[in-house]
Amino acid sequence: MKRIIHILYLTGFLLFSSCGGAPETTEEAAQERTEEHGEEDPNMAELTDEQYRVAGITLGKPEMRNLSNTLVLTGKLDLPPQNRAAVSAPLGGFVKSTDLLEGMRVRKGQLIAKIENAEFVTLQQDYLEARSRLDFLELEYGRQKELSAEQVTSAKTLQQTTSEYRSVRAQVEGLGERLRIIGVNPASLREGSISRILPVHAPINGYVTYINANVGQFVNPTDVLFRIADTDHLHVELTVFEKDVPALKKGQDVLYSLSNETLASRKATIYLIGKEISQERTVQVHAHMEEEDKDLVPGMYVQARVALDGHQVLALPEAAVVQDAGRDFVFHYTGQEKEGGTVMRRFRMVPVERGTEEGGYVQVAFPAGVDTAAANFVTKGAYSLLSKMRNAEEEGGHH
Image 1 (tube, rainbow, N blue to C red):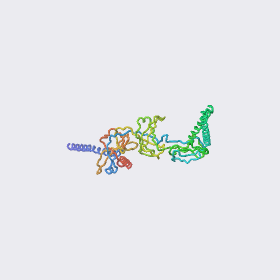
Image 2: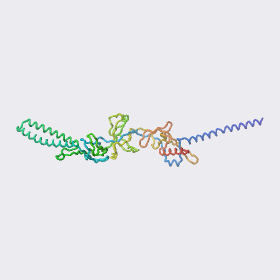
Image 3: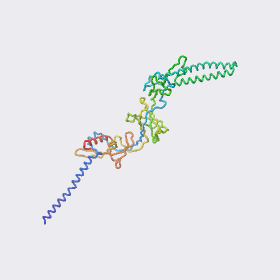
Image 4: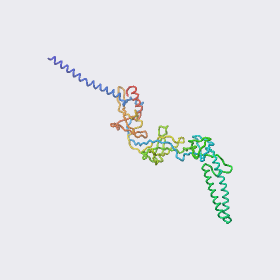
């Protein structure tokens, strides 16, 4: 009987020992599974002290900064109407000669083309004949006034002479104005100087931007032969949607860039805001360039930023925010841990929403539960850390 009790006691002890060892084995397995899960987490990264130093990582906390809302606009470089000129031949005719090429600079009053037209000959002839008759009538008018004062001639004769004199004088004035319209000074016309060539002069200083005149070509008075642009007064012409117009005002600063520039470093100031809304529900805003560049060409596309009134927002340096798979992230420093003889610094990617950007800082909105007052984030070297993570994924190693 005693032997049976001893056997039962020994069996129970063995069973208790076996059951007591099971939790220890299960806990170790769970820890291994947790570690394995940590290694597979694509949002975790770890660096040694040496890797941390080489990556140039700097830590910092988000801070409240006064950032301005930025309005992004598009537009082009343009010229005021007085700095553009379309040149035509008022009488039309055949192009006799021109030496212009696109891009050439011309001076105001410079001869830029010659047009041949028989009507020009007739106009000069009529003017010279009318002026000669006017000289005769002017003398006759003076003589008749003297005779009438001495009652030698009748009042009717004086009236007829006066009427004819005034009529011819008006004719001379009219022909003279027609000559001035085509660029000819009537006072320069003399007998024997009639020409069939009509000179065409540049109306402004500037560069030739358009040519539609070939030697021998017949042109009508309505045809534009040349276009000239004076680029000394280029300005920025911005297109603004009507909903954004109330946020703009005269004197606001504008930063703009050309199509081949990535950084908006050129400066302008809003000078005029249009008062008419187009069919596309937009308004034109005129801005004066701070530094005029004569090498720029009217019509160039520009992208501009206008800083609006600022407000306090939570912000990090722009270098702290990385983009991965179309989303924005920052790296939260979760601390360090010693593995063997190596100290490992650990980081976790945290998704954020970007907001206003200004002066190298960007507004960030964190997910709920992130203690931004206590946490440290990577403010410099974030892309190096992201690159290390992704390279480690491709190699199948640790983050």
